Amino acid sequence: MFKIISITAGESHGKGLMGILEGIPANLPLDAAYINRHLKRRQKGYGRGGRMKIESDTVEIISGVRWGRTLGSPIGLFIRNRDWENWKEGMSDSPGSEGSIPPVSRPRPGHADLPGILKYNQDDIRNILERSSARETAARVALGSVARAFLEFFNIRIGSFVTSIGKRSLDLSTSELSPEELQALSERAETSDLHLPDESREADFRALIDQARDEGYSLGGIFTVFATGLPPGLGSHIQWNRRLDARISYAFMGIQAIKGVEIGGGFMMTRRPGNEVLDEILPEDPPLFRRETNHAGGIEGGMTNGMPVIVRAAMKPIPTQRRPLRSIDILTGETVEAAYERSDVCAVPAASVIGEAALALVLADAFLEKFGGDCIEETRRNFDGYMDSLSRRFRDTF
Image 1 (cartoon, one colour):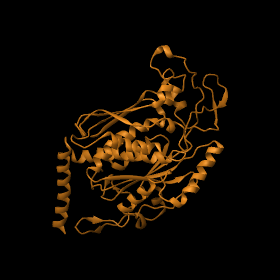
Image 2 (tube, rainbow, N blue to C red):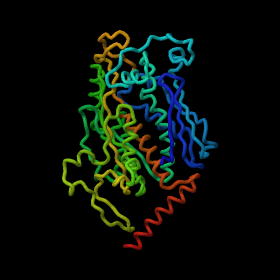
Image 3 (spheres, helix red, strand yellow):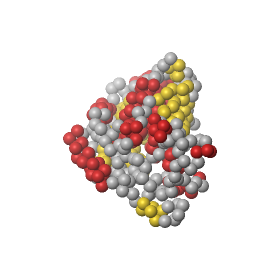
Image 4 (cartoon, one colour):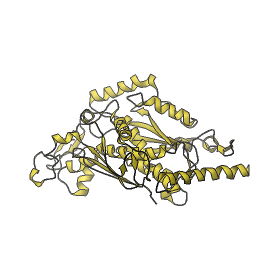
């Protein structure tokens, strides 16, 4: 079913992170500078921790691209960890380095630490936390940037913005926003270190993060990711796992610390009657269709309907607390404070950029599932032919 295959590898303090993306057609223009721009966006955000002062993520394209264009073969990407210089022994692959640093034995509530050591039969939590760390998302953003470049070739645009952090939230509904209005919110958010589209609320949000930092706890929040310019018909209703909203939800829940996903109006729609939240279908000239509302978030029956796809995701507070919670030492059985690893106070702004990458990967996969093509020119012909056929069909009907 899947036309695009993506996989990442690497540990948080290892030599680096790797990503492989297979399925992108040949002849797509692509260079490292484009990917690096999105990697830099991921590293920004008020409330980020000290690691972002060490790393300055840049990608090395090691396969699949020649002279600025994709070859149709797997695209290999590598992001070097600058902090590796401080961890050469602690994260060495050599058996001679065993015991060079003490084991981590105090699992953090809310992290992969405890279930990970139980599942993989480990005595050192570092063998779990290094891979489960959100540092892995740098590779996912790199891969998602390639998928994003593919979508932009067809004038499909992806953006995002933060709508809440902790108890602070914006009173912002997306159900009646045009593609242009969504893009304007995203562009406004790009100028904010909170990725917030409302400048008047920034001081209030920053004060909340400052308080959390001072008192030693972390904060979560909610962000919105959207895509505009999508054709109708991506995804399918014929099997549960081909529904596009199911695939999007799967990808977003795969982002570290994400605990909830909504498409369009989501849970709000359960509190209002159908006549208020089902998007009426109205005629349009040229003869296709239009909607005055988008409570469905651009997806009906598991398929895009031509409206912007809108996804909201809820991020829990990061498990690492500067003022640790109670835990147990897995080596001694003693009641202790959970381990502290250098971490962020709030990473919701960064998570919104990671969400863009997740959405890009799913949409590129669905787009190629629909239109195929071994080279970008073939995909373009298939796409243009489909859109022309829709226009002719309803021009004749109306």
